[in-house]
Length: 72
Image (cartoon, rainbow, N blue to C red):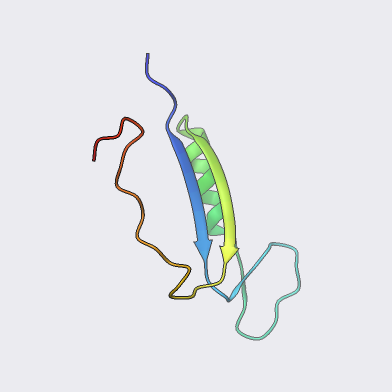
């Protein structure tokens, strides 16, 4: 038996606003992260949603390529 995959959905972009919040000029609602997390859950994963997080060079790091078993 294998453990359920864990998925973290991170939405980035200073233009993103939570659904239901009023939009300002140049802003959009963050709907994709909710849809992606729901799709991962439907596929059997433990899904977590993080964000939105502003896009800045210092906050963006390459994703980890190491699996939970420690292998890449």
